[in-house]
Image (tube, rainbow, N blue to C red; front, top):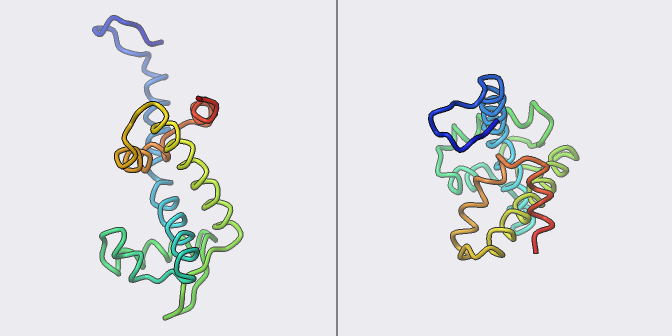
Length: 142
């Protein structure tokens, strides 16, 4: 239970659930970011390459390659050596879901007066940590 008395802590079980959810969101964040960017690159350039991903995420090619191998093993992408990366049906569905969440958060932030450039930056982090319930409220906010 949340109260206004700052000296009283939230119930330990409730707080533990909050932190478990945050850790779970962090685990999914990289997957969501990569799948969403691959979809964007495919839409804009008709191809998504390892070098493009590494450059846009500001990581080394070996780091991006390691993540892509995990995404391939989890069924989100398919690729062949020295070829473009493509999303599987599972990857396309996740990319669509991530894009929708991002747009809802971005639109909400802009509607409440956050400057668009700041809203774009903030939406990128919030979209991974927002509950379905809060997202629905953001969607309805006019």
